[in-house]
Image (cartoon, rainbow, N blue to C red):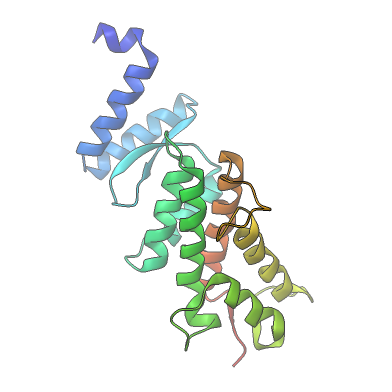
Length: 200
């Protein structure tokens, strides 16, 4: 116990390990509350396998949105969970997080944008919406709302190197991954909840 008190990194590693083997939601909620009260940079999150882990704390509103968007067992939820863990976990994998963010949007948007093309990439969906934006609508009253959604999708699609493009950075930075995963979380939520939808 003395070693844990003396070594901050060892303590954090021990807490992270305990979370990985303890699947009790009450324990996770209790620890999350203690970390918040202590104003820790960490909170309790869930990895792609549904196991608890320490993650870097994000704004409460965004965390709640991600929890809602990843609560299902569908493909979009799984990819977004994985992207979030890889972007905000204690050992981030930025490029992998960006890859999973793209897959999450593809899974959420495909039924809305390209329902008859099971192999459509995010790039293909962006092109489809850009070519005929009048086919989609949102809950916003803004005149350019669909184009704003397309721009966000394009940001995630082109925000880091894809398909070996030599003009893009070789690897995503941690900051890039965090921004793109946060954007993906909003897009997944919008497509899943019907905030972005086809015009009847």
